Length: 245
Image: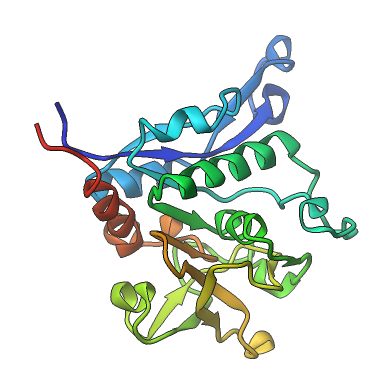
């Protein structure tokens, strides 16, 4: 049997009509997808990525997984944290929200390692009772290739992120929402130095007692993806749950 840990990967559900080049006769069909770079980052770090379809009770997955990666995507529906939708909000993806929040609950109960990326960080914060700023447009830098950096982040000494990146790290920026109130049990361990938000916009969260780490940027899209330590973090912690042989 393989001793490579299984890392569950969440993704989005779209109709085939949203996918360029799909024949019209297939437009009514649904598809599940995520950017392949998430899986490639896990593979490069020594793990085996496993897609998690939305049609299954998420609690049924966790006993067979060694870790979970919450990928990026659309906004968390604002009602989940007691807010009305902003005019700039993405269309709600209720099925995905319910699935991922249930997955986080089950993972926390079993102390499963969890890595959150972009939306994944926001899902973790909302699950923990936190809230979000719904529209910070200067962070949504879709005008720049995400392989490179937009700004740096300051990282808290002694944190898990500091062990991975040191005191500062260069990151890309592809989000228009950020953490407002931090959820229970979560600790801010990285903040933005972006000039218009030099007051400490949250870029990294960790749990105070569980193996949970989240970043607001997209390490899977950067040039360093195949060696980015955040993928090594989830695979290493997941490996501790695998019995050799």
